[in-house]
Each structure stands twice: as C-alpha cells, then as structure tokens.
Length: 319
Image (cartoon, rainbow, N blue to C red; front, top):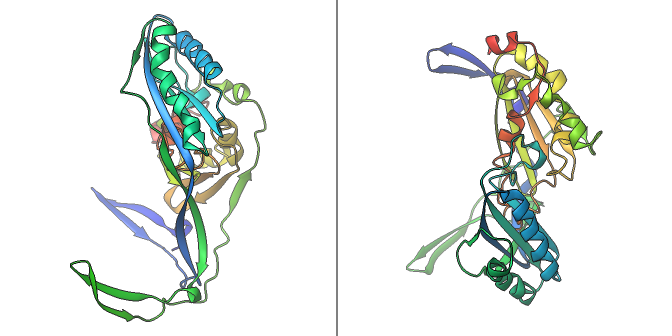
C-alpha cells in the first residue's frame, strides 16, 4: 500500500471516510527478522532522595564508574524521574527523588560480575539518602536484531502439521506471488547531522509567545529495530500548512541530537494532514540490545509534542 495516497474525511459523528488509497503488485523480496548472540548486558538501579537528589545521583554515578571501569563495550547512566527518556528536551526543575539507573554491556559475562556487586555495595559508602532497588543485578544474554531482505526464489513455502509434537503431514504450497513492483518515489526530507547545538535548537522554549506543539498536533512513536519513528498528525489544515514549513527533518534532528546519532527522514502524508519521521540509530542498538529504559522509543512523540514554538494563536482555535 502507498500510505502517502491515503485520504481521511469526517463523514459524520464517529464516522471517518478513508479513500484514494493506491497500491502495487507484490515485491520479489521477503522481509526477514533475524537475531544473533551479541554478548551480555546488565542494569541496576538505586533510589536517591532529596534534597539535592540530582547532584547526589551524579556524584554516585561518578564514584561508581571510577570503581567499576570495565572492560565494557558500552555504559549508560540514566536519571529516571528527571530526564532519562528525553534528555535535554526536558524543561523542568529537579525532583525530590531520582531513580539512578546504571547499565553496561560486555562481550564476556564475567566482565559484568563486578558491576553487579558494586551497585548495592556503594549504598553504604556513597552519598547519603540512597536505597537499593531489588537484589544484585544479573547479566542477561543479548540477542541483537538483524533486519534483512531475502529473494522469494530462495524459499520454498510449505505447510507442516504436527500432532503431540510429532510431524504427521507436510506438503509444499505454491510460491508466494511476485508482481511488477514499482517503488513509490515519496517526497522526503533528510537531515544527516545537527545544524546547531541542542541549546540553540531549544531557544524558542523560553519565549513568552511560545506554545506547546501538542496544541496543534497529535503524535505517537515506536521502534523499527534501531530506528524510531514518530508519526505526527496536524489538528487542522491550517496547522498542517504551518508544520509543513516549520517541522522539518533538520529541526527534528536538531531537537533529538542527543538520542539520534543517525539521519532523520521526513515523509509527508498530505491526505491525513500528517508526517512520518524516521530517526535512525536512535535506540542504542534496538529493543533487545539497548541499555535504555525506553528501549522502543515509545516516549519520543511526547518529547516532540512538549516542545514550545511560536505559532499564530488562531491555529489553536482552528484545531
């Protein structure tokens, strides 16, 4: 299906008309999701109370990583309750409690043993006001995701029937249809690197005339391997026209530069008054490999909607 051809129209109360959808014949390729063993990871958390919860958490993490240097392939420190999901896209003061979340990944399981022991031991020798969460962190085997494409000619479909765990019947079936697939050349914007610092990118947030994007748009996000996608729908045609010019791939790349190390691509969905943003290399390797608390980018859309920008007040009334 060509999602850029979808049109939505209000057809009455609680009724939406969907029309104009185009498609093409099947492709000659299967989409394949593979996984491979990729070392081990471990995460552990401690609760840190106020006053000065963030400063205590930062001190605890410095002491921890100095005493537990690895060897690790990757480490991560997150301040849950402060900015673990959105980093600098958060605009608020410190909370009274912070869940300090520490994570490490290594090729060999034994390299994570000291990591697991060090988290609870520092409660007695680190900053005051720290409580342990759970027991000693355990190492987990990492299965990394590997998406691929495979020619349909390389696979012979078959149906197998099992009874009580035993194969009782098996037969080949017709090959999956292959058509004259022609890829749709969708208009796309691409941003490969930030154009300014995160502080400069968020400068509009402090203006008295700025308002949250959530007033003129809806959004939802999720994962595709190590890529996060954010779908945005404008609340009105006027809001869509504004977002078409304002919410570019480059702006989203600038906003999410701390989370997204790859490129950002924006696709337009004019019939739905929407956009789809793909943020590559945004999830620390993907859901099964990442150390992040938001392994699937489910909170990205809320970070985008929380950003404050300057737009005409009549756009809110239209929405």
